[in-house]
Length: 450
Image 1 (cartoon, helix red, strand yellow):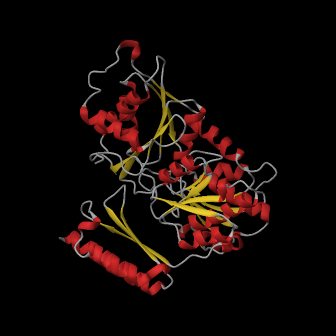
Image 2 (cartoon, rainbow, N blue to C red):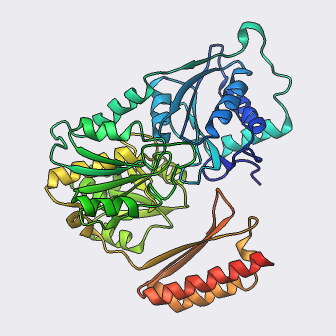
């Protein structure tokens, strides 16, 4: 059983175990111990989002790393994919992001990238847990000039901005685009507006005034309705909503209609197929992606494979099988030809390039796939629950799966980052799937009440 790491690093309420400064220091020591394998100075990059708790966790992490004789490079608030980029660009030994992504401000988390810019595999995280809880590092304390030191990279955002712009075709500009951009009061607020403006776009920026507490608050990729309404109000060409740490993208077409990650993947996969740049003609998605996406891929002459939920599992599949593009319905989009992890700004640039090349509005491009009706509901529980232990739940699943047959599906899973049970039902009849989802959520809530 994992004690610390979930599907996306360590996460929890800030200042409550496991997101305490004491544990952050231990995690820092474990990261440093893991990367120290040569007789030379090692360096680890630390970045963060805009949560008020990032300051204390940043200092604790840096102290733990330095106490093991490894140097720290601080970059301040920057999107998660920016840390992946800076880590590889600086030839650092690891990169750490302090962020709880799309969660509310009181939560925080620690994500770790290896020197190649990819998230750590499960086995490495497990070995770090062993280091922490076995206290194997206690006797290892460098002294004198062997302790680490910290320095700040002042131009990290500028480096990342230049990289992002380099992924947009040089023959195009965004001079004729009006973009509504929602930065979720998160890590992209000091990056994303500059990227699109420097490429020529007229940008109406929303949620770019973080105060430590308003990250993801009724804005960003989890609440794109704000952005979509502004697109419709201003008659903009497109709306872009990023999440708190900048690795997700949800968009709005010119009419204010929300376009989710599945549709963005379909549009980009179609273009990559046309250019013969979609490796093995295959898109990698997760079990959460709509059945309509798989049908669209087959109609385009491509294929789609599914992984477990989490962008790290999408990336692992892509690397193992040699695929080049994948993502999640939630807006994680991974272009491995450009970067090692999901990047909301980079994904937006690829989508805008397609609109520019084809000369079509997003509403027209989005017709490449038709979604099956799908309902997704979250039930927050007092503690983490085992689905199979919920009275009557397995039997209800079997009954409803028989009712839907091959024209639908049910997926129930616990969140990997919080005490939430996620219920997804998909099928041709919206009324039927709503009823099924409500019944299943009711069983979870009854079990939670005990």
